Length: 104
Image (cartoon, rainbow, N blue to C red; front, side, top):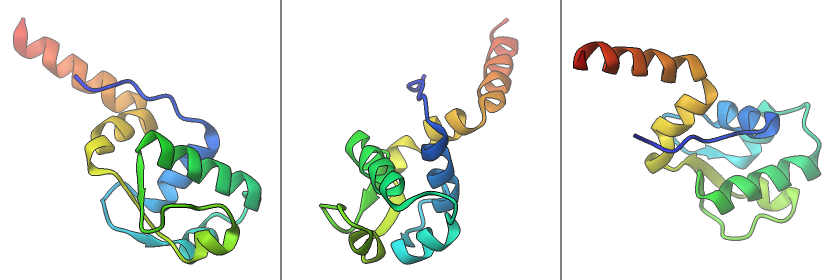
């Protein structure tokens, strides 16, 4: 069984904008998709997701909006299933119901 991941609203917004398919998205397109988030909050949230290992990036340090624009981001494939569960808690409950039915 995977880890239970708790995400903030900003983290959820960013992960949904990037997508959980493993495809990389250029930072400039990510910024376009997330218009309502302030630059500082976006950078802080991205850095947090990178530090936790949930995101992978082509640039090591993402400190400014220019850094974000020049970087490509993708979800770490090791965490995709756990992140899907975190984004949709009902998905986890359904999977647990199916496991219980098969055992009993």
